[in-house]
Image (cartoon, rainbow, N blue to C red):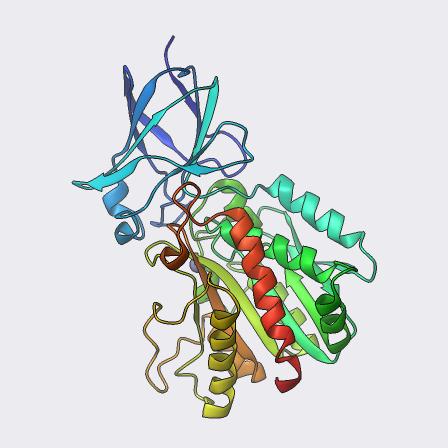
Length: 372
Ligand SMILES: [Zn+2]
């Protein structure tokens, strides 16, 4: 029987170049109207009992080729558990070797978070006591843009994820955050809800998610370069969310992402904004230090370079929100590889660890909510 490969489903992405015996040559498909690509997600049928060599031939031209060394592809037989498998990067080719034990095996850049699961999450959380759901707008492909609001406190907290749709760990994080915040038995969550009002956008980029994009929406636009001047034509997702933020104001904001290269969880702040003050900056640094003290799945040594004074890019949401609202604003980056300081050789960084990191972030926020 010959091997059959398909990516024709929610968040699927792969192109078959050639199949010769147990060797399959593949390419990742670019985001529509964009040069970005790195996200892959496909299934292999007809390979039970065979050891496949899956070669992604165009890996070197992907958005972050330095993300491949040290990276391990994820596979699943049941689409619930996603484990790492033998992967190496050499001569511009990412080679995944895997012995398939079942009729269908799934491969992905990271454990996928489907739009169906998104709708399950939003609908389930919207049923919880004290939660308000709003559809803030629609995307270029006509999908709803969901926002869940809960809590009665004066501090305005915005949590938003997946501007970059291929960073699926961001929505796993959001699932953890929403479950934490709606847990009636959790005293920390109950206390937080009296001190703050939480506005949560679990998926800023449904179109890119469904289309299997890495970084852009249906028009090939990187939403995290649109926050200075979002438009209905290019970036209705950002326009809708930013307008809603203008109505509430923002005291604390977290933009949740995944990083291809750095094998660690880290935060990026808003250094270089025109209105920077050391006092506001220290609140961000304080949050990062407390989070690192709270969980071994966070650290502050590895991360991005800081922008020099006056050089912040105000088209990026974290900078825009700090400048616009004086918010303690930050970008959380989780790894596609692993948090090496606390590595898991079987799963690497994973959905459950993303969810638990959200709990740690909110517990840390609870300890300083009155200082914002
Ligand atoms: Zn990102």
